[in-house]
Image 1: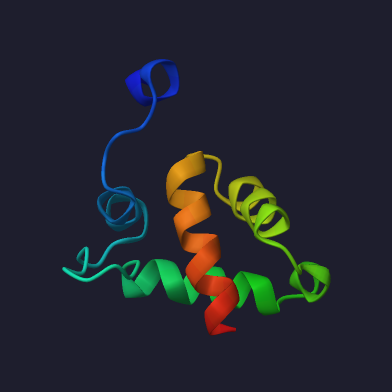
Image 2 (image 1 turned 135 degrees about the horizontal axis):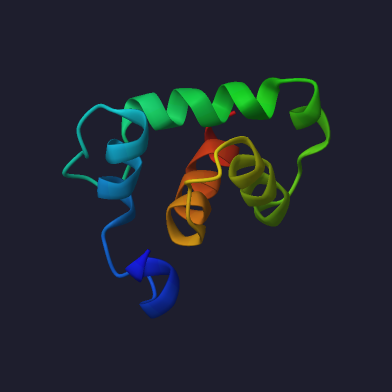
Length: 83
């Protein structure tokens, strides 16, 4: 809740690991379970027309309401490049 009020300064990899499991990699990549979820979501019927990072963030946050903006943006950047 405090992240909603004061902003999210936590490493997005840590937040993604909390939500999707796995470990936060030491490198700049999202945790593998989060990447798998995001890429699969982008490949689904609704994901066929996702072309921009903004659209991907909107899709991710609609599918997982606990996903905040910074981790969703981080995940969208990597998932769009991986698909």
